[in-house]
Length: 171
Image (cartoon, rainbow, N blue to C red):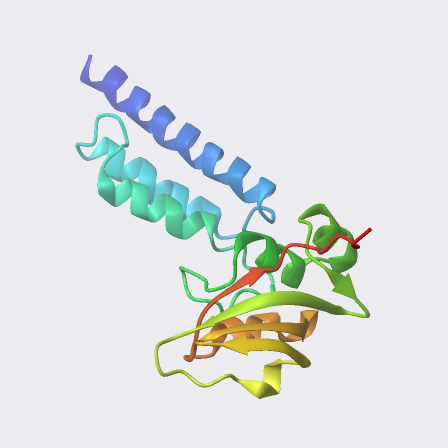
């Protein structure tokens, strides 16, 4: 009977690894080194985890989900990125204009209009800004080249980079 329980635990571990792979496919594809991670999760479930929901397993799953093993422009971003979700998707997109449009981010000539929040006392990293539109008390509205978004988010002076809602023409 103990053997049956171990087999069930092994199956759960394998199924859990399969679910992680599905989320990787949705967010960038599976990784070649996943079997090792799956084996680790499977053996940790067999070693005493009954449902695979320990915080240790959740941490492993999260780390595996974020690692696609492929070159990605957002790879250098910290775990909690200063780039908003929509801005990060534009930075990583093959067709940034279409992604910007889908997120209502104003786009023109390879640049997006964003609101940059600076850290207290932080200075604007001008190397990553194409054109400053407005600047007021640590908030800067600017046009930023799509290729510069990740570098802007990496700057220690930058707290966040969010889209500025597209403006509608006045009637």
